[in-house]
Image 1 (cartoon, rainbow, N blue to C red):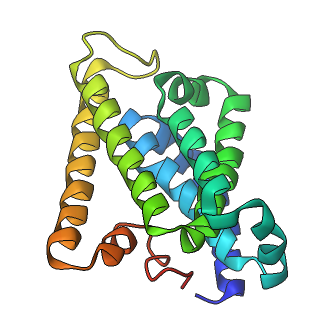
Image 2 (image 1 turned 180 degrees about the vertical axis):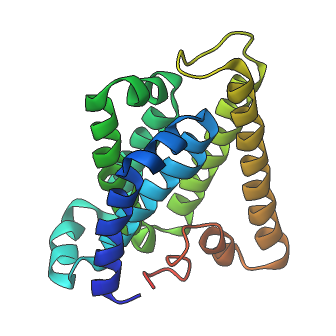
Image 3 (image 1 turned 90 degrees about the horizontal axis):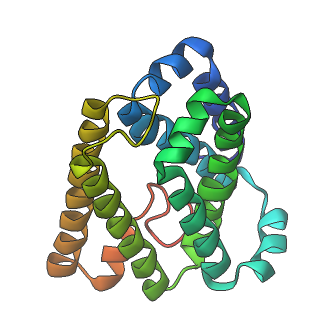
Length: 203
């Protein structure tokens, strides 16, 4: 995708997601907020990263050697938005909702787009392992909890989210296992990575 097109998509996607009818629909369900709205906001950040000129990317590189800094930022920001408290706050507090629309593209999508091509096979493995662990850990928590963890959502919606997170973790695990068994180890880390970044450099 050309930089201009990526930049345009990066700007339009959050605006579309912030449109009141669509925002209300996505935030009415705990599952839709975490598995549709949040990933789309992260994709907007990745598109923003792909739209940056080479000069900007070169200025960032000394602070993100090997993608390690970006990995830390992505890990902590993602963990924050997996928490029930954060999902609840984004529904009831306009300030928290604004923070979601800013931090997910800028602290998850953008660092991921900038860091993934620079990461070694080991660091990519660390990121994928952490993603797997988080999906299974949070999925199990949401599924087995006997009480609501979010005041804004019902217990059935919470359990449904748990099921979907466990299914997503299983799908990612199978994808990695497939590549390890029938592909090269390098391809395993690349194939399970973000779309457009799998060849080791942005598309």
